[in-house]
Structures are given as C-alpha cells and as structure tokens.
Amino acid sequence: MLNVASGKKKSPVGKKLFYLVTAILLLASLVTTFFGKKGFLDIQKQKKRYDELVAQIKEFDRQIEKLKAEIEALETNPQILEKEVRERLWLIKPEEKLIIRRKDGASGQ
Image (tube, rainbow, N blue to C red; front, side, top):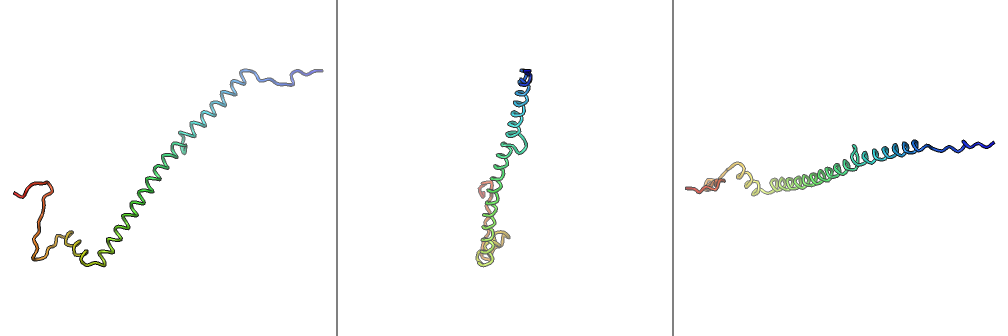
C-alpha cells in the first residue's frame, strides 16, 4: 500500500501566515534595535553626553590647576598677595589716589 499522505504539504494560507509572522517579528526587532530603550540611537545620544562630560571634567581639571597655581603664588609671593588684597578690599596707601571708572562709558563731566 502506497501512502500518499506521508509527505505533508503546507497550505498556501499557512505559508502566508508564517511569512507574515516572520516579517512582523523581524520588523519589531529592527525597530527595537534602533528606537527602543538602549537602542542604537539611545546609545549614540548617551555617547555624545559622555563625551561632553569628559570635556567638562577636563575643563574643571584645568581650572583646578590654575587655582592651585594662584594659591601657591599668593602663599609664596608677598607682592602678589598685597596686590590681590588691595584690589579686592579697595585698600590704598596714604600717598595713593583712587580713580574709579564708570562702566556705562559716561565722561567725568
């Protein structure tokens, strides 16, 4: 006896359904890869933010070094300390005259 039904053939509707489900899953995975949380675009945005923060840290390190050098100069050089104190506290020596300029550009008339 010959069994013809042993080789199952998929129906055209079953194939179409299989392809449709596969296409939907593929599309969903692509959308998630690019637009989802921790997707490609999110990673690029986070990398840009990371680079900005690294640059900001480098700038702060430069400012720290500049301030450390300024502190060292103020601690070791009395002329620099005197100049800084006189400028910040508006101190003048008895034989000096203080000249104040207006910032609005008005003349002294």
